[in-house]
Length: 90
Image 1 (tube, helix red, strand yellow):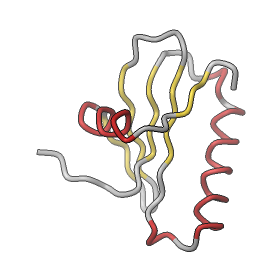
Image 2: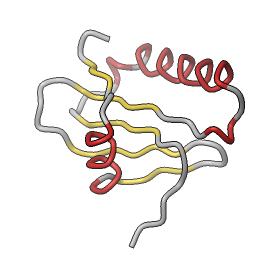
Image 3: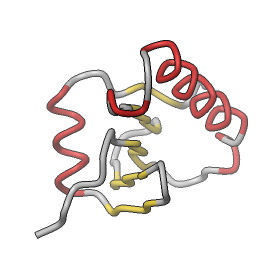
């Protein structure tokens, strides 16, 4: 957790979504972009369609917790973003 910063601003998310590489599953999409900073960055966003606020927050807490547990095994400096929906790439 000491080597990771959370993305909070819309500009940061948009930049990562525009330049990132997508990995998608049934209910989860991950975007990874290169980062020249000394720290890793993670951003989480979940669509309103996924349920009420307490369910979305619980899902974000679980994802964040698992990320922090495996943070040491993530060696390279990347921005890891989990967007709220799959976007089409053009």
